[in-house]
Image (tube, rainbow, N blue to C red):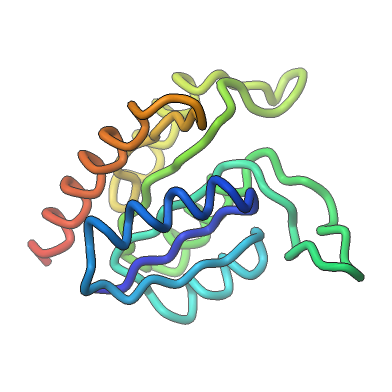
Length: 155
């Protein structure tokens, strides 16, 4: 099983990666830190499962690169590309935001979840709300992984 984690926040990435490796010890886990590097890896590797942040920079941040513009809906954009390219990876969104975008583009987490369920039924599993000082996100991610891994073995 191949699992791709796309997350730009170092601490959140560490905690998610640790949990994923603990729950799926034989999986090949790859980590990416931006929209571009994550999308490129997803299109190249066709992972069974993608654990995906919703808002992230366009490019990997480095000493010489600031990351380009922040994409509030980067996760949704990656889901759209998977659908367009007919890649059947299961996707779990893990976010620490309760609202996204601004003005007319603004959505609450609940609205976004409903939109993703409607638009990406083949790929989208669920959204996990991540809060660093709480542990509920761990149980929610474990449940979502069980759903995703169970459904990916049906194909």
